Structure formats: structure tokens, C-alpha cells
Length: 241
Length: 222
Image (cartoon, rainbow over all chains, first blue to last red):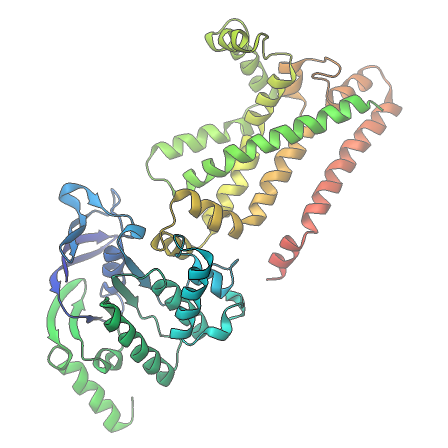
């Protein structure tokens, strides 16, 4: 279970969120600039406060504090058992796909590391990309490898920031389905940010509706996204979707 | 041709470059990745030798390493000889003088590395040392190359600091630049021509070798 109460300023943007996420799969829905990425970065431990951009609050995951600014606690990103996959794959350009996936597997011997890399590449459907350089991959292929890299260390919490934006609908649905099975088997909690209502409605997830940095609603997708769903239905009916 | 001075210049430049790399890589990473207002002051101090006249820097070092200061007396007691007018003293002077020529390209190179790569490495558990060695250095390898070549050539052609701090001791502190100065002072323009040509050829050869490497050519085409 993820619990957060956060108050952060980034330039003129003010994020103020307090909620408890108990579902295995939660979707943060909001339009561009709503604060989805900022929230995920704070959860991942990347948005550490600067003097000019203060952030106060507390994040706990399964009872363990990841961030608690009152106690000056801010666990480093690599110590949170948390992975973040963003829209931009950010693959290391000097390493091939397999080496990218292996980057977070330092504690394993070579045999187990290679087996883990193969397993992760197979999960995301990128086995044949293992020895390709990031600059030779398409956007969708790079996103698959980035997902494999994030999953390889075995995170307990997976944060997804529109990670399948470069994949077509069918490929995205298939990958999402495989990913959800894998997360369920491993008891990994996932939080996905999206501005696409079809993505938000595609899963039986709990949805957080974020607007201008504030939490507007929280609950089942069918309830929270009623307006967006009707708007989508109307667009489909009139052929403007 | 003074081959002894030629060899000494190369030895000085090699030692300076190796020491500089060990200092400049972590220092540049700190300047790029670190936080705090004191970093601006640190960067100013690191850049100072670039704008300070070499003779002024050489004079300061001569005084600092001489018997008048505690540091100078301490070093003399430790080594058994003063650092001024010795090869070791020249190395220290050269490292300080060429520091900005190693740090500036590295800072520019590290700062140009996409922050998303740095975030990704941190999320995957990379600490500061691994982050620098496995991500920043390989991604900014062109800057690393510049941070090797520029201080090396800068040291080979160094004159002001060498003359102030090292004087003109054959085999110990007499570099090619000092030889050239002596030749011109003695109106031996034919010998000066040859020495200057060697210094010029060394610079052109090193720069051509660096800019023709696959790293640079590939990066430019990309």
C-alpha cells in the first residue's frame, strides 16, 4: 500500500496531493500539466527539494517511509525498490539493449544476470533486440527495452509515465496484459500516469483524477471518468475520435 | 636540437595530464551534479588560472612552495628538498595552471548529458562513482578526449610558470619553451626555428590525431 501526502512547488506549479493507494494497479489521469509526472518523480525520489522549489510531505510504501521531510528523510532513488518508466526511454546510448537491461543487476553473477536479462527481454517481446544499440531501435522498441530494464531489478513498486506512447494500440494492449500478469504474480504494485482516457478505462484500475496539481477524485475508473467516458463515446458516435 | 629538453617536456606533460585526469573527472562531476552555492565559488577558483597571468601564478607558487611559508618548509622537511626549482615543483605548477583546461571541457560534456540518463542510472541503483564512470564519462567521451589533449599540449608549450617556478636547470626544469627562449635571446634564430617547428608539429600532430578519431568523426556526422 502506498500512502502519500505531498505539497511541492516546481516553479509556478503547485502540487498538493494526499491519498492512499491500495490497489495493485492505479491510474493517475489528468491532462498535460496536471502534475502527473511531477508526482511520479516525487514517488521515485527524483524530485528532491531545492531551496527555490520546496517540497514537504511524506510517502510510505507498505509501512516503510520513503520520504518524510519532517525527519529529513529522502531515500535515494536506487534504495526505494521502485522503478520508473517514462515516455522517453532514456536508454544508455553506449550500451546495447541487453547491457541496458543488465545495468541494474549488479549483485548477480554472470549466469543469473544473463538469464534475468533474457527473461525480461522475452517478457516485453524484445528478445531479438538484445544486441542492438539504442540508436538503431524504433521508438516502440526502445520503450520495450526501457520497460525490461526497469523490471529487471525486481521492483516492489512500478511507476509508469505513459510508457507505451510509441506503441500502436494492439501492441500496447498485448504488452500491458503481459505486464499486468507479471506484476500480479510478483505482487508488485503499479501506478501509471496517462492523459489518454482509453488507457485509463482499459484496465479495471482505481483512478486518481488530477487537475492543476490537485486531486479531484479517486475511485473506480467507471465512476471517476464518467464525463471523459461520455465524451469519448460521443466522439466515437460522431466519428471524430 | 635539445633532446633532453624535448624528453623533459613530454615527461612533464604526461605526468601533468595523468594527475589532472584523476583530479578533473571527479571535480567536474561535482560541479555538474552537486548542489550548493559554494560550487560557484569552487568553479571560480578552478577557472582562475585561466585568466591569471602565468608569471603571477608562477610567482605565487614560488613563494608558497619556498622556505618563507609553513607549507614550503613542511614540504622541504618531508621531501628533503624544496619543491621550487625541481621537476616535482614544475608538475605541481603545471597541474594548477592547466586545471581549467581539463575541467572546462569535462564540465561542458557532463552538463550536456541528458538528465534522463542520469535519473535512469540513479533509479537503477548507481551511486556517484558508478554514475560518473559508467554513464557520464562514456557518454561525454569527446570531452574526455579534449580534457586529455588540451592540458597535454598546454603543458608542452608552458613558459611563464616554468620560468618562474623552475628556472632553467638542464635535465630538471629546462623545457622546450625555455630552450626556445634561450635560443632567441642568443640570436640563434636557426636553432629557434627548429625548436619552434617541433613545438608546432607536436601540437598539430596531436590535434589532428584526436580530431581524426572515430569518436569525433562519428559524433560529428551524427
